[in-house]
Length: 421
Ligand code: GDP
Ligand code: IMO
Ligand code: MG
Image (cartoon, rainbow, N blue to C red; front, side):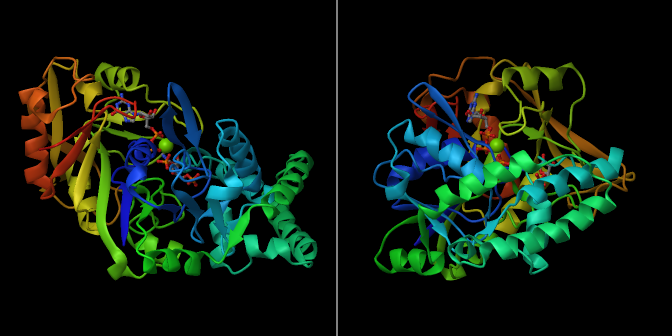
């Protein structure tokens, strides 16, 4: 049996905290897509940790963690992160497993990402510059090197061949930076990676399922960054939606039970691309300040706006969401008035549909206003003690999207989460 936790917006919904919260109920936590572009924040005691490659269940003794074949893996980030979690007493040799089929991010992928973004100029995606796009291009282009290849003696030759190919592309971009230091780190890190548990991920996970173990698939990025259904081309390069679980882990669709979709009580986006409910005024600034909305991977200020129910309903449909988890409700504690977007005016015509593409149209959000609850919700533990106005707000969202909010997160801490009853 497999459940999933994934993002319903443009990423950074608080997936890391939610996975960490539910992890004790599962035996295996598995990442199925994305790579070090992800930044999943969680707290161990009062220590803040941001995970990029390792699944967010790693701090729970009884769960094992799998990096699935759908992930792109940067050995340098992985090594650094393993060292961080080891300083908390986590034994990655015991509880971290990596699929042989996971594709590697090479130093030249990072260089290509940078070169491509520079060439795009003002039209750039605003990528995290972690080499994600180029690494997935090599996967679909059938050139990539995979974790299992590390164990083969032909690895260095294959690396040199691919590197040469990349160099020609970099020359075309007129990219001049010296990346020899990156390569040095990379070769050091692959020696480290070889010592970890490299497994046949699809058998590993299916055997666990057959033994009756519970698996939690952890999404990265968000549904509106999905390569197929997101705001293309301002998206990432993988399927961030439920479908990605099957191809990213080797799991059959009928094994998937609950799909827990995470949304903030408002909305953020980092990087370029359409964001219909974005607030570029003082209210947006307040959301950023109160929500501490700065990227966990790049430190960039996140763009902030009201919750977009058109996009949220679309994300619930694409993912087959069975439960919605609302995070950062406490960030709205101080607002007199709240708004939710219930439809778009697309080139003057009202619509509740996410259009084929959003950049070539003028999209105006149609807003419904709510009274803010104006009280501190951060120490509430029971649903009955949450402000009535918050319940009205959540109730409207439930009705609009047709799926109910099951948990409301009211602070970054592990214990700051309220079950809806
Ligand atoms: P992820 O990428 O989806 O895991 O989310 P990030 O870690 O990038 O960003 C979420 C941020 O919000 C982190 O700094 C979390 O510590 C914080 N956070 C998560 N849930 C809550 C919440 O309910 N309230 C507040 N105030 N912060 C939260
Ligand atoms: P988590 O898992 C927010 C965004 C980038 C950029 C676009 C493409 O922490 O929610 P990429 O590096 O993937 O080629 O960048 O996607 N992006 C994210 N935004 N959270 C993330 O991950 C993101 N991962 C990528 O900012 O706009
Ligand atoms: Mg994040």
